[in-house]
Figure 1 (cartoon, rainbow, N blue to C red):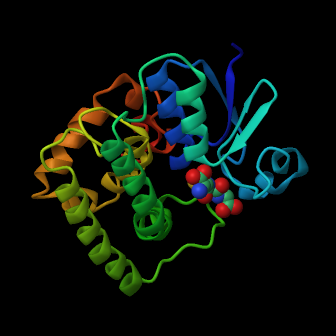
Figure 2 (cartoon, rainbow, N blue to C red):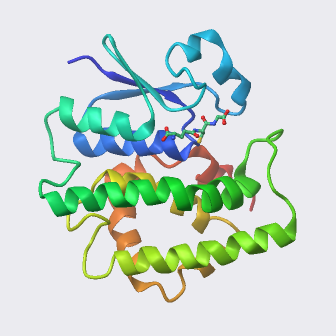
Length: 221
Ligand SMILES: N[C@@H](CCC(=O)N[C@@H](CS)C(=O)NCC(=O)O)C(=O)O
């Protein structure tokens, strides 16, 4: 089978979600860098042909084009041989969808688009800088960490004892959150999140997909 092409920036959490899926599946893929530091590139016709909403990631595999990170992850899981990235049982599969839905609808708007974006967004992007607003994000993030911690009680990963697409969605977001100035404070007393973090961050897939923004050599001393 030909290589999967993942279009996007290696700094994007959603792009990393799809790369984690390829890595865990053992599916051959290539990173096709677009929109690395400038989103206007995503509105050009050649990218709109891959992603009509002008976002990343988009995937090309032979004559198959797919956009949206979760759809790409499912394609990778179902079109390639390798370890299953989605649980088999009805309960755990629903649990995976529960978390992907909750992460996208409740966690992404505050933790990622609100808080992390304020710190890591490429220059020129319109992000929140008002301290009062950021403090209200912190409050919500603390509550979301409590919910995640409770959800991880008694299990290794979000959907059970095997890693799944839900973990691929959350891992890149928490990696950025942990790298904000007060990032570690959100995880204090959250033993289940810490255990989960140890499990996901020690996998080769994690190490092979670290965003350039978070690589030590690119960070100020
Ligand atoms: N629901 C989408 C979210 C993708 C997304 O928002 N990507 C951001 C980068 S992290 C993007 O393309 N932003 C460009 C823009 O807002 O113009 C997915 O899961 O793929």
